[in-house]
Length: 487
Image: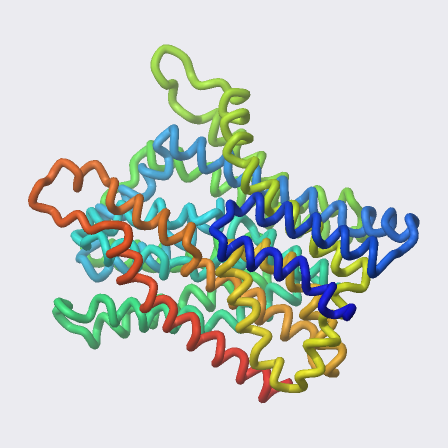
């Protein structure tokens, strides 16, 4: 009975998803259900609620700050043309279609996603893939397959939530997630090859290029997690891929000079990456405290990067756009994302605090070792429903941790593998597929050309979904089997 009650918030989320409710409504109703169940079936004293506020409050605030900073930076770089300037320069420098495609999928899309999150990598990747000559279907699916660094998206708030709710260190979860992401990246490379092999001049060379880029990205992220910490790892890993391609373009003689505009556009990202690294080094000897957390917070450095991006932006018209106006616009865009993520994060804290997660985890653990195979699948399903690894981890991390403890298995492994599969499943989330289609189908260059095919949203989705679903199911089951065999 208690296990059924504990599962109600997640059941409500699933039911509302199937009913096509808005994400914000799904999150708020799930939270309301969780609070009601906790008060009726899992009552705890007020002092415990206060203690939970002290424990989880800083995490929730940091996550919301990271999300707002990501939205604001995305808006500033889009309005000022900074992201278009960077992307255009890299696209023009590509020596051929194959090199340009691989650079976009394993370099530019992960970079944009690591900095700002929310599927922004898709908005960067699709236009470039169209300019390279891909049709709507290919541009959409390839950009979605580039979402392989979502555990580090927007400086990793989802991974931070998973670590805190499970009682693990962010460093450990980040490193384990990087190790477990190798099948995701190789699977994405193989799926890209299956999409591109027809018409490729040398399919074998294309596959080797894709696999090499996937390995390079994974290796760069793993090394950055070990040396610099989790928040900047996605940025650093994708930059490694971009830099290697730039060197190759230089050797091939196709590299276009960056120019002052591109260098100015890159400055906020340089400040963000360097600031996070220096802050980590400066606070490494400090005892754990709110001050240490604030100094090395991805949210704080995102806001600093936003200030840099705004201050160096060229004037628009007679006067530059005021920062307050941009912040208000970003706030309006942030509301649905922030409220949804915040509600799911608070729900995760309620599950952990009240004992609901422990009860549900114990019930799942009664399945025995079979749940070690199904746990990653559950993480993927949560990522598909929420469209966010932060939301998925908020719902499941406490439960996954309790299930692992009840089975005597590794909490770190089950939480990290769920983090990875939930992140990967956002490729298939309806909101992400719709974003990819809109970016491709509504491209101004294509609308003005009557000879270009204009497939419907249903046609594009029907073509994309089976390919990504096959990848998702295969990787989830593979990681589940690995978890079962090893732990």
